[in-house]
Amino acid sequence: MNIIATRIKKAMDIRNMRQVDVIEKSGINKGSLSSYLSGKYIPKQSNIIRLASALNVAEAWLSGQDVPMERIDYSSALEVHESFDSLSEMDIKLLDYFSRLNETGKAEALKRICELTYLYSYTESNS
Image (cartoon, rainbow, N blue to C red):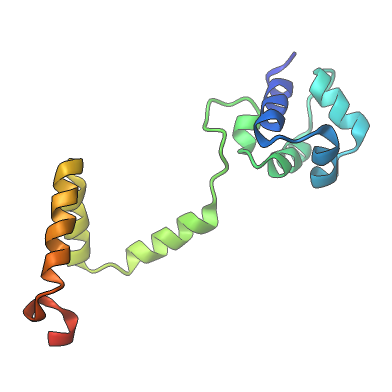
């Protein structure tokens, strides 16, 4: 059996999907899906894309590449990027310093920042 067939089956198991579910979500006909699952045929790129979407897995993973199985939600990544672009230099410094801390240090930093928000002289409303 080829790696694509193995990965289709693995994704179906993980997603708790039957062949009929994959057929319905992907629009691929029953004969083609059966051929892919048996390893008789390798799906064309367009069908790999349809299968990956139906199974909610990364196309590259389904194709056999050594990448994570989970799809990357690029719309979320774009939102994060846009949010990052709107950060001030001070915000970026704060994140940089915070990322250098271990879990105990991060917990303490959050506690101290929270405490500062209760002091009138350190809040936005006092600016």
